[in-house]
Image (tube, rainbow, N blue to C red; front, side):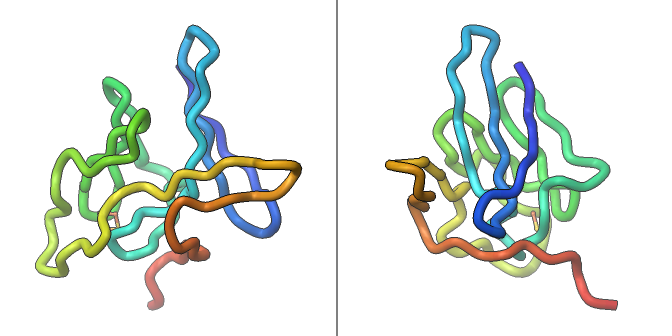
Length: 104
Ligand code: FES
């Protein structure tokens, strides 16, 4: 399996590919605080991605939240945003956003 990052139409996209060739595409941002996933510290374990910021865990097959973030801020609509390319256009299953690092 592999997790790769790319940019399409200005959006960061991550593609999780299983060894059998099945692919799952998502916006490469954590829905908790809209932080980027393509940073140091992101981990993939057993088809799950662990956000390096507050350690929420999402399943890369379904997009569902597996473990709540370790934060006082609740995660609203907390699931990965699935992405498909249909007739050359990106279709988001959810409201897309541009992930950003926290401001200093
Ligand atoms: S930004 Fe990902 S868990 Fe908070």
